[in-house]
Length: 276
Length: 253
Image: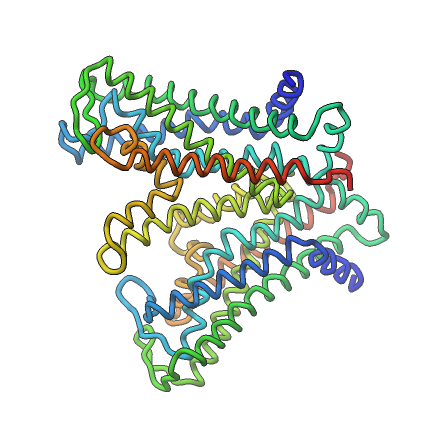
């Protein structure tokens, strides 16, 4: 099992695409530094969205999770799962005495490890960039409940936020794994994945417009946070705030995503006949 | 050449995913038509909008679905046929046949152009059907400051769909150029979409890839020729360069 995992990891990192993504991550970080330096000129200090050295990683990642990291997840899944099924490489791997369950777990572990690596790299770069470019403070003002956290509590908040981000990435990965193992085609996985992200961005926006007219406010909030992208964008702040009753709902949505899509993906991947 | 085209066309349709994609596309277009009728106005640009009627419904339906077509469905069809087939090694078997190198590529282009037409006909069919069933014909209406009657509106529909087809051919030229140069399907997909988005920033005259129907309205209502010129240049350069690279390409890897 460990050997299978190592071979999967080596196969992914022997491809150009994973190195290209690795090269793009510092660029993404530089992009957000430039954007938020001009953003700070419009916001007064003391606001929760005034970017400081402590909250720069949080603000930066909540923008980048929505598009960049979701696209990275699609790319990884279409190379690790869909592409290998499509061009028949998977048959060579299945000659080895491992079950499809083990193979599925190894592939999932590979994707999640790589994703974790990218996220950690992005986070570290952002922490460093925050200390270099943004005003140094020793209190962090959280979103929503606007608590003032001391330095250690702020660092703890940062770590919690990072792990919450990683958990949302697991849910996204389970959705895309399902798409990959159903379609067995690189292009369909890419198209369907991009379509899923579009929908998950657009539907909460549409619901927000219709707040007053059609459905009540509390129902709309719950419908909006059924979208995993909405959770990635603003939901993690809700999850970590103490005052809101939405935290358990968000945890429930994520569990449903991971369990439901992950299980269907597992089932379709394992039950398929790869030898035809 | 004709046989090669037929074989290409049959290969497009023998895949289960093509049928699924067309089915899903039809469902999405139906939903969009329903949404559009629900709102009841056709938004031309930021300041101009007109009430929908039987004649202008197909234009605005195309405007709704153009995003989906240019960003997801057409890149998937193009790159699946141009890039993935070659990468998986299946295409080397077709290249054994005694035809000129060029004609393989040209037959691919013809079959993909026909595929674009099929999609456009789906949108047009749904647009006309919805227009006649749910909306009232209005024989005199203004559009972009111009008075139009029913006959003119029908002609305008043909022009809008024709120009959209030409824009899709530009997309095909870019897609085939990218997939001839870069062999990785994943990179070419995002590079293609990146090019569309990048063109938006380079110049407003190149924005016809993403804001296609807005630029078509603009071109048809004013005297500007920039869309025709840019489309012609992109098609000539794209297809020409593609043929040259493809004829010299080594099919060994």
